[in-house]
Length: 166
Image (cartoon, rainbow, N blue to C red; front, side, top):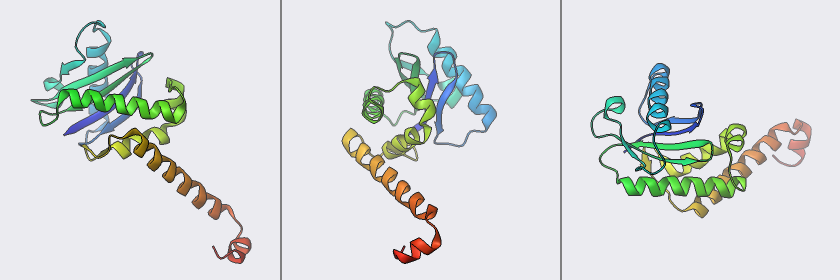
Protein backbone atom coordinates (compact mmCIF):
# COMPACT_ATOMS: atom_id res chain seq x y z
CA UNK A 1 0.00 0.00 0.00
CA UNK A 2 1.15 3.50 -0.74
CA UNK A 3 1.32 5.44 2.50
CA UNK A 4 2.06 8.93 1.18
CA UNK A 5 2.90 10.98 -1.87
CA UNK A 6 4.96 14.10 -1.38
CA UNK A 7 6.34 16.77 -3.66
CA UNK A 8 8.94 18.80 -1.80
CA UNK A 9 11.02 21.66 -3.15
CA UNK A 10 14.80 21.55 -2.89
CA UNK A 11 14.45 24.19 -0.17
CA UNK A 12 12.35 21.80 1.92
CA UNK A 13 8.95 23.39 1.25
CA UNK A 14 6.11 20.90 0.77
CA UNK A 15 4.29 21.52 -2.51
CA UNK A 16 1.99 18.49 -2.28
CA UNK A 17 1.29 16.22 0.66
CA UNK A 18 -1.14 13.34 0.33
CA UNK A 19 -1.26 10.82 3.18
CA UNK A 20 -3.34 7.68 2.75
CA UNK A 21 -3.32 6.97 6.48
CA UNK A 22 -4.30 9.73 8.87
CA UNK A 23 -1.39 11.78 10.18
CA UNK A 24 -1.92 14.80 12.43
CA UNK A 25 -0.45 18.05 11.06
CA UNK A 26 2.46 17.96 13.52
CA UNK A 27 3.38 14.46 12.37
CA UNK A 28 3.09 15.53 8.73
CA UNK A 29 5.58 18.34 9.36
CA UNK A 30 7.91 15.90 11.10
CA UNK A 31 7.67 13.51 8.15
CA UNK A 32 8.45 16.29 5.66
CA UNK A 33 11.50 17.35 7.69
CA UNK A 34 12.70 13.75 7.92
CA UNK A 35 12.18 13.05 4.20
CA UNK A 36 13.81 16.31 3.14
CA UNK A 37 16.75 15.67 5.46
CA UNK A 38 17.18 12.14 4.16
CA UNK A 39 17.02 13.15 0.49
CA UNK A 40 18.76 16.51 0.35
CA UNK A 41 22.09 15.12 1.54
CA UNK A 42 22.15 12.17 -0.86
CA UNK A 43 24.52 12.25 -3.81
CA UNK A 44 23.06 11.88 -7.30
CA UNK A 45 24.84 8.60 -7.98
CA UNK A 46 23.10 6.53 -5.27
CA UNK A 47 19.91 4.48 -5.31
CA UNK A 48 16.53 6.22 -5.34
CA UNK A 49 15.28 3.96 -2.54
CA UNK A 50 15.49 4.82 1.16
CA UNK A 51 14.35 2.86 4.21
CA UNK A 52 11.78 4.83 6.22
CA UNK A 53 11.15 2.46 9.13
CA UNK A 54 11.88 5.11 11.74
CA UNK A 55 9.19 7.50 10.54
CA UNK A 56 6.42 5.33 8.99
CA UNK A 57 7.00 2.00 10.76
CA UNK A 58 8.61 -1.31 9.86
CA UNK A 59 8.84 -2.34 6.22
CA UNK A 60 8.30 1.14 4.83
CA UNK A 61 10.45 2.51 2.04
CA UNK A 62 10.69 5.73 0.11
CA UNK A 63 11.27 5.97 -3.60
CA UNK A 64 12.00 9.36 -5.07
CA UNK A 65 12.93 11.23 -8.18
CA UNK A 66 14.87 14.49 -8.06
CA UNK A 67 13.86 16.79 -10.90
CA UNK A 68 15.12 20.35 -11.18
CA UNK A 69 13.85 22.03 -7.98
CA UNK A 70 11.58 19.21 -6.77
CA UNK A 71 11.71 15.86 -5.02
CA UNK A 72 8.80 13.62 -5.92
CA UNK A 73 8.51 11.01 -3.18
CA UNK A 74 6.30 7.96 -2.68
CA UNK A 75 6.26 6.19 0.70
CA UNK A 76 5.05 2.60 0.53
CA UNK A 77 5.06 -0.64 2.50
CA UNK A 78 6.48 -4.06 1.65
CA UNK A 79 3.37 -5.08 -0.32
CA UNK A 80 4.43 -2.80 -3.19
CA UNK A 81 7.24 -3.38 -5.68
CA UNK A 82 10.02 -0.78 -5.56
CA UNK A 83 10.52 -0.63 -9.32
CA UNK A 84 6.78 -0.38 -9.90
CA UNK A 85 6.72 2.63 -7.55
CA UNK A 86 9.59 4.24 -9.45
CA UNK A 87 7.66 3.66 -12.68
CA UNK A 88 4.54 5.19 -11.07
CA UNK A 89 6.53 8.33 -10.30
CA UNK A 90 7.53 8.43 -13.96
CA UNK A 91 3.87 8.14 -15.04
CA UNK A 92 2.97 10.93 -12.60
CA UNK A 93 5.69 13.20 -14.01
CA UNK A 94 4.81 12.40 -17.64
CA UNK A 95 1.14 13.14 -16.97
CA UNK A 96 2.01 16.46 -15.33
CA UNK A 97 4.30 17.31 -18.26
CA UNK A 98 1.39 16.72 -20.63
CA UNK A 99 -0.95 18.81 -18.46
CA UNK A 100 1.38 21.77 -18.11
CA UNK A 101 3.64 21.48 -21.17
CA UNK A 102 6.86 20.73 -19.27
CA UNK A 103 5.87 21.01 -15.62
CA UNK A 104 7.79 23.25 -13.24
CA UNK A 105 7.46 24.18 -9.57
CA UNK A 106 5.29 27.22 -10.33
CA UNK A 107 2.81 25.05 -12.24
CA UNK A 108 2.47 22.92 -9.13
CA UNK A 109 2.04 25.92 -6.84
CA UNK A 110 -0.58 27.69 -8.96
CA UNK A 111 -2.47 24.60 -10.18
CA UNK A 112 -2.63 22.49 -7.05
CA UNK A 113 -6.23 21.45 -7.77
CA UNK A 114 -5.23 19.90 -11.09
CA UNK A 115 -2.23 18.26 -9.41
CA UNK A 116 -4.51 16.65 -6.83
CA UNK A 117 -6.92 15.56 -9.54
CA UNK A 118 -4.13 13.85 -11.48
CA UNK A 119 -2.95 12.08 -8.34
CA UNK A 120 -6.49 11.05 -7.39
CA UNK A 121 -6.98 9.54 -10.84
CA UNK A 122 -3.83 7.45 -10.31
CA UNK A 123 -4.12 6.43 -6.66
CA UNK A 124 -7.23 5.84 -4.57
CA UNK A 125 -6.93 5.05 -0.88
CA UNK A 126 -3.28 4.06 -1.26
CA UNK A 127 -3.96 1.64 -4.13
CA UNK A 128 -2.90 2.22 -7.72
CA UNK A 129 -5.96 2.41 -9.97
CA UNK A 130 -4.61 3.82 -13.24
CA UNK A 131 -1.17 3.91 -14.86
CA UNK A 132 -2.04 4.99 -18.40
CA UNK A 133 -1.11 8.65 -18.77
CA UNK A 134 -3.56 9.23 -21.63
CA UNK A 135 -6.48 7.78 -19.64
CA UNK A 136 -5.56 9.90 -16.62
CA UNK A 137 -5.48 13.04 -18.78
CA UNK A 138 -8.83 12.14 -20.35
CA UNK A 139 -10.42 11.82 -16.90
CA UNK A 140 -8.82 15.07 -15.70
CA UNK A 141 -10.14 16.89 -18.78
CA UNK A 142 -13.61 15.38 -18.25
CA UNK A 143 -13.62 16.56 -14.63
CA UNK A 144 -12.50 20.07 -15.67
CA UNK A 145 -15.23 20.21 -18.32
CA UNK A 146 -17.90 19.14 -15.80
CA UNK A 147 -16.68 21.68 -13.24
CA UNK A 148 -16.69 24.42 -15.85
CA UNK A 149 -20.22 23.61 -17.04
CA UNK A 150 -21.58 23.41 -13.50
CA UNK A 151 -19.98 26.73 -12.52
CA UNK A 152 -21.35 28.34 -15.69
CA UNK A 153 -24.86 27.13 -14.86
CA UNK A 154 -24.67 28.46 -11.32
CA UNK A 155 -23.55 31.90 -12.58
CA UNK A 156 -26.56 32.21 -14.90
CA UNK A 157 -29.43 34.32 -13.59
CA UNK A 158 -32.46 32.23 -12.67
CA UNK A 159 -34.66 33.79 -15.34
CA UNK A 160 -32.20 32.83 -18.08
CA UNK A 161 -31.52 29.33 -16.71
CA UNK A 162 -35.29 28.68 -16.47
CA UNK A 163 -35.66 29.83 -20.05
CA UNK A 164 -33.09 27.30 -21.25
CA UNK A 165 -34.48 24.52 -19.06
CA UNK A 166 -31.46 24.31 -16.77
